[in-house]
Image (tube, one colour):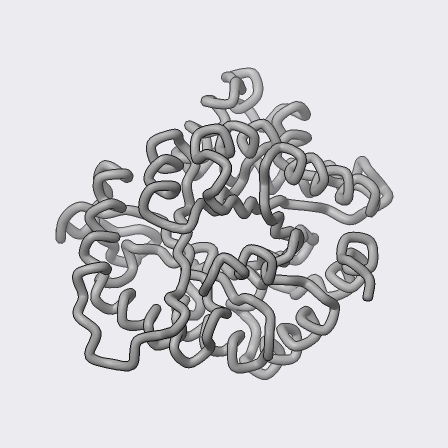
Length: 306
């Protein structure tokens, strides 16, 4: 994957968790339509649905040109040997179209439990990620080597992880961030690193209803994801913005809600702040449903014509 990938991604893509609960047939149909709508990339999350490698293969095989990006592949879920060989396989089978986003962290084989699932214990994030990248790079190639080499990005939020992303990978994929964070990330990584940011959006002309959904989204992360709480505190938000539910100031910084113009304006603000690419996570009242109507509505307003 050459530097042309930056252009292939375009300025706007789609980010979604919605594929995880859908049958493969519907995922293939949706991916093909997203490609036809003109989006440059499909970013997909990984929780406890499909494995990121299987999901990537499903999306790549259903499309012809669009970039398919993991956002992110959790390094706590698989050995670096497995991740490196999967990256090579997808990169060789679909040249220039697979972008590996890596996140999560671990340091040893100690097991703890999360919602009943055994998971490796967490340690210092930057040290762990650096070691994971070292281990991936050390895996010998016993299968065809992809040409071009697939790109990697890191789910970077803090300054140290952002610097690591700029030094060791193509760049960063920050999630749950404000425009101010985008500007800080660009300053930390410099002008050459790729910066593809996730932006949560609610399309609803009833702004009060849209704000309610956006607030629930923000509340879910700041109440259950310590790294996300730490990041918004780095951005200057305090107890008044977090404890007891997110403040409107915090909700407005993290989400874009309302009509198409509100989304278009937020995308442009990220691009002006230094983002190369903005991937939109459409929030709806049913998080398990694919927001195909909203993806269709956004496309003509945000994507280049012709």
